[in-house]
Amino acid sequence: MRESRTFAERTKVLKSDEATKKYFLIYEGSETEVIYFDAICSLREDIGINPLIELIPIIRSFSEDGWSNPKKILDRVIQNIRESKEQSITYESLLNRIMDYLYETKIITTSKVLARNIWKTMQKTCVEKLQKSLDDVVENVDDTCNMLINVLKEGYEVVNIVGDISDIIKDGGLTYDQDLDQICMIVDRDKESFVSSQYDYVLNKCKEMGFQFCVTNPCFEFWLLLHFDEVFGLDKEKILNNPKATSKRRYVENELHRICPTYKKSSYHAEILVKNLDKAIENEKKFCEDIKELEATIGSNIGKLIHQMRQNL
Image (tube, rainbow, N blue to C red; front, top):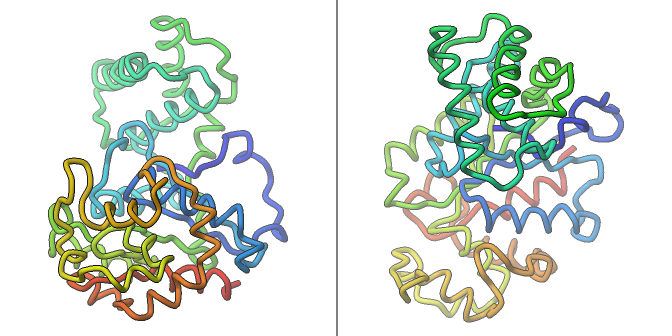
């Protein structure tokens, strides 16, 4: 997991008066939620979010690509926070940060084959030359980085890697301050992949860690539907069970598409919805907002999160 910043931005000295509180946004999905909260960020002045609050999306690193299980994602975030606090790093985290660097500096662009081969080469080097698994803790980051980069230069003619890459890698952890900042898990209540025991685990672990656990039941599209009063005319049983309505869409997404015909998971005009944010927050109150009851009840607490962003400093 990494912050959605460039490495250059990450290495700058932060000005304490620019952002007094950070909200780290961790999404289960990789498209719909990202688009919506990007619009929240771009329209923050219009919707009343204090300018001293910084919204920071957390992005999956290479080996985490495709993850959707909230428990797995939460455990990795906690691991990354612990690594940043203890100034330690596993080989998997180190390899992920090198991959992040290669992507962000455009050394790797769109070739998934190249990315997979580079990852396999680094992993093989750790196992065969260092006799280390990905779960082991790196003893010397500088030496390990230099060795891996030399291997990549020889095998893939990778160039333009800065000399202080090990320093950049060390600074690549989360800048989360548990006494000041807020981590927000934003997930769907998907009964098929997010079973009850996992829900309880994430709920309790978030309470223990002081994280926000933000759930929409049955899915994030229901929160988007709350931006329209037409939501009250929909079949509640169908909303909760969310059966397939077409070969491509389930009931909630299909109703959202009917009300907002331009909607697609990977492309929609979120700014139009965000302009109805106050309506969505009020409509949410007419459904379930309690995080425990959201496990089995239609509703969302995204509106409560955004209300907190408006109030909290």
